[in-house]
Amino acid sequence: DGGITQSPKYLFRKEGQNVTLSCEQNLNHDAMYWYRQDPGQGLRLIYYSQIVNDFQKGDIAEGYSVSREKKESFPLTVTSAQKNPTAFYLCASSPGNSGTAEQYFGPGTRLTVT
Amino acid sequence: SQQGEEDPQALSIQEGENATMNCSYKTSINNLQWYRQNSGRGLVHLILIRSNEREKHSGRLRVTLDTSKKSSSLLITASRAADTASYFCVVSGGYNKLIFGAGTRLAVHP
Image (cartoon, chains in turn yellow, green):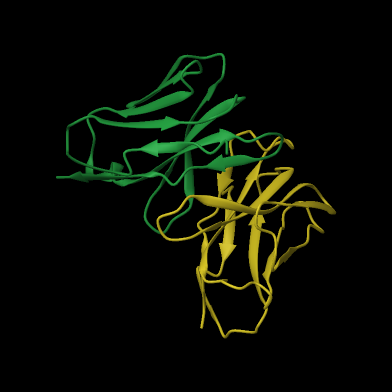
């Protein structure tokens, strides 16, 4: 069953703690993306990766870090430096390395930091 | 900003009616895409229309693109309660980036 998985679905953390969100895909896609969505808003790009061992900052990268050691995996760490980390986080992937192609989304992780 | 802006922000209709959502953008584009998001879920790609295309159909969906007016519309015919979702117009914002608007929240009442 092909697709993108994100875990966990809900995540709760105390302020000051780093937290890592998982994203795995078995679609053999080259490119992967992380977005943040706030209530009633569209998606904002945090980081993206076109190829293994390479990634680029998106529009709101401050306070976040990523790695791309394997083609299938693109974990996102929300660090304590992120001022407003509570949000809905979405991972996506696309074939090839053009970010303007159709993207396939995971189900999302809702992070709450108190 | 190249962000697509959807109009209206919210739309409420009865089952069986048609729903029309509009999108405007500011600069030239490679393509324009529409996505659907059910509440609290990931996004699902609906349709992609290239800049040299004027109209595209997929099932009950019809998308038009007018590059001279920098606008697009998404028509859902014979709507169903299951069409209740947010719909996002997404434009290509330069190499390797998609730019998402804030979306239109569609409610279809039985």
